[in-house]
Amino acid sequence: MVDLKQLQKEIYQNKLDKKFNVTDVSMEFALTYGELGEAYDAYCKKKANVGEELADVAIYLLGLSEILDVDLEKEILAKMEINKKRVYKKIDGVLTKAEN
Image (cartoon, rainbow, N blue to C red; front, side, top):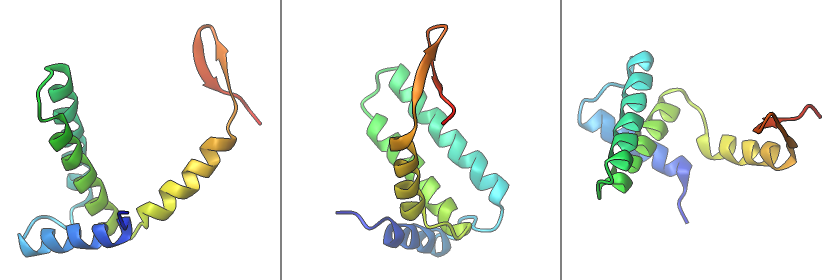
């Protein structure tokens, strides 16, 4: 089992060790977005490295979470509970969140 909280800390420490950015939050969002684009490109081109690109996305996301002092594991679990209770309906063929 993976401990996301510990993984966040390890990723952040690696950023410090390698002298990567840990202060410019806007840049971290942009870099995370860029990694997601690379993953999508690998998927579209049926490249074998899709998993590696998705790992990059996760690493950037966990690093950003640590920079922002967000316990991503806690947030994911809380959001999953919210999503389990959500009700959706199709409107004009599009699945749309229904008001509770």
